[in-house]
Image (cartoon, rainbow, N blue to C red):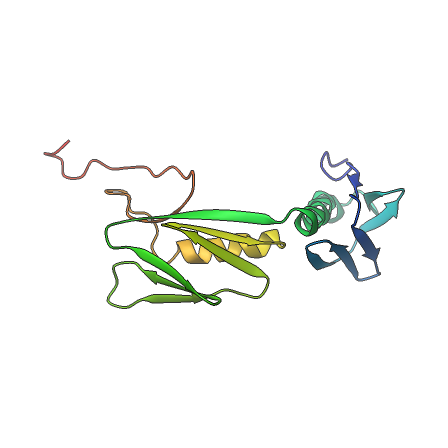
Amino acid sequence: MSRIGKLPISIPDGVTITVDSDAITVKGPKGELKQFTMAGVDVVVENDKVIVKRVSDEWEHRSKHGLMRTLVANMIEGVTKGFEKQLQITGVGFRVNLAGTTLKLSLGFSHEVEYKLPEGIQAKIEQLTITISGIDKQLVGQVAAEIRAFKKPEPYKGKGIAYVGERILRKSGKSGKE
């Protein structure tokens, strides 16, 4: 039995879960999320708890069991609390501005990089820290990864865009210099 998949998920107040034959819909105070169901995995709502069960012990069903439970738990957490990722910009002359739903990044290129935020994602800028927030954990992580990919932190001076708390392995530079 999957250690993660067998754990029931408690449903907080203000959250409604609808299970159809092909999708699960979670509505809460922050919004609504929808996830398709996987073959071989049944999702049941009983007594303010969500229970994920698998049909058989085949390897395909076992592999989807814990994943489906985690996806439902993330949807419940997203519509109640939301998710956020923080990015730190490091470098001389690097700047970031928010114009509507477009991030404008000056990262030392000959041009300014513009990134249009997808629907359901908000960005907040405090000096050189970008906070990406939303109710969909997967979309928040994807947007943060796409912004970081514009200028990954380099190992010599650490210039670039990194997650807050990310450890950047630094190199010493030329062999004569320490």
